[in-house]
Image 1 (cartoon, helix red, strand yellow):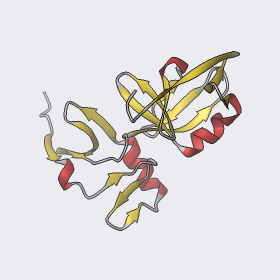
Image 2 (tube, rainbow, N blue to C red; image 1 turned 90 degrees about the vertical axis):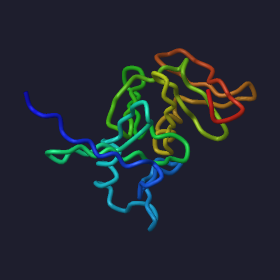
Image 3 (cartoon, rainbow, N blue to C red; image 1 turned 180 degrees about the vertical axis):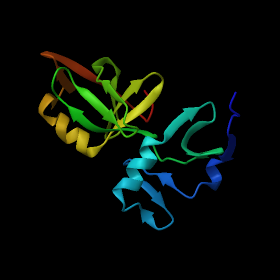
Length: 158
């Protein structure tokens, strides 16, 4: 039986990078400029009982770097409006939009999924604009020919 790789854990307070409220990776010098590095970090996000971390495997060891984030660690980065509404997260995970799980908090749109709060990026919101509307009665989204009200909360939570 192969040996389990050694696990190196970097606590959140020692991380040299963070995720800002718009889903951008940053360090002491500002926002990461290299898109491939940002995409790699997003794809390496995992979660356990300690929170969100970036996981990197290096042969004989696994490095888990718990990182700070301003709002949430999960973001909808892209939207496909065909056959329902398909969402692509920053982690590369894909899922269907569930209108019952959408909510507006502050000036942002979120969706709950399996106990995790996912924020819609600006790009995703632009794509959703054609199926969303705002009236004096609130926010609405049309999915598969049905109009759904999006609930509004007073703060960050659902």
